[in-house]
Amino acid sequence: MLQKADAVVVGGGIMGASVAHFLARKGIGKVALLEKRTLAAVSTGHSAAVVRTFYSNPLTIKLAKRALEMFGNDRDALGGDCGFRSIGYLCLLGAHTREAGREVLRCLRAQHVDAKEISPDEVRGLLPQISLDSVVGGIYEPQSGYADPVKTTRSLVEGAKARGLDACEGVGVVGIRLEGNRVAGVETEQGVIETRLVVNAAGPWGRHLGLSAGLNYSIRWSRECDMVLRLPSGFGTFPLISDTNFRVYFRPEGDHEVLIGLGWPKEIEPLDIDAYDPRLDAATRERIERGAFQRVPAFREADYVRGWTSLYTITDDWHPVVGPEPELEGYYACFGGSGHGFKLGPSLGEALSDMILGNTPEIDIHAFRPGRFMEGENFSSVWGGGNRA
Ligand SMILES: Cc1cc2nc3c(=O)[nH]c(=O)nc-3n(C[C@H](O)[C@H](O)[C@H](O)COP(=O)(O)OP(=O)(O)OC[C@H]3O[C@@H](n4cnc5c(N)ncnc54)[C@H](O)[C@@H]3O)c2cc1C
Image (cartoon, rainbow, N blue to C red; front, side):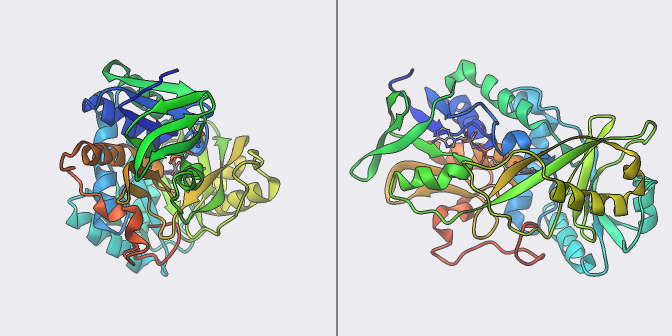
């Protein structure tokens, strides 16, 4: 194993792979990406991987918009094929969410995103089998889509190998080694790597890794499940759909399947991140099916294929923590995706790498700095608290 690196990134999910990719591509030198399990083994590999811009603050919209551009040009921008399919995104609105949806549309237009309000009839045009029960309309983004999260992570890694990125799977970091108030290295299960630069992209374990350097992050963890059904033949195509009435989202999974999960507003379902059951339990499957079958009765004819349990790593305002810790030279945080981390990963990695290299990032991500909570500068959302940021 390496004994010295110009940068060490801890965690091989989308966040770590992205920042490691851009650091290497921008010429920092030798980058070690250390992953305790395998690349994309935890939240990233179990993600629905929806990439949409439907947010209510300018920074998140800008990052999501940039990510869409990158996925649309994945071989050049992200190092390889990410399995991206631009199929459109539709947020179904009810009477109680119409105003929030329209406010999001105003925010999207202010950032020059291609989005529009559509009528219930137009909703039916996108998915003829849909029930319009309690639907007053929708907001539609034609450019949005979904990617393959494992392919994306691997492409980011493969695409920067020739520029100095060395990904080490099966290597757990035990702690960050300090010299006074600066980073001096990382201690792994297989020895020490000397470095002056560490990025904490340990996802759910971002808090644990932070503690090894005296940093105390406020994080919650919540179970997050998805399931896949095989569609009846001839079902047809449809966009990604979020349903604010029946609290589910669904999207095609390839050409013959649909992936479904519980949507906004979500309860927090605490779990032990070191010992949870990765299977989909019967009660959650029933909750997902209840909402999905109400919205699309024809899904009742679909066959259950598979389901899983993974997790969200949630910060106090449901936005990631990304940036330096002013009192610890050489350390940067990049975790806390809070249900949005897959789509934000590529553009956050790009911006953070610029910040680390002393360049001015095209998108200013200072507002994601870890210190914002102490400074009372939490993000807010037109949807109130919770998972729709
Ligand atoms: C079911 C589900 C659906 C989702 N749907 C979407 C969606 O549609 N769109 C979207 O944008 N987001 C979605 N998300 C959220 C998104 O997937 C996450 O925010 C994102 O994947 C987090 O990436 P990460 O790199 O921070 O964490 P992770 O993917 O969890 O990666 C962290 C990695 O760090 C490693 N690690 C931890 N500690 C150490 C250590 N000490 N040493 C070495 N390695 C370590 C872990 O093994 C892990 O592989 C979803 C999440 C889930 C679970």
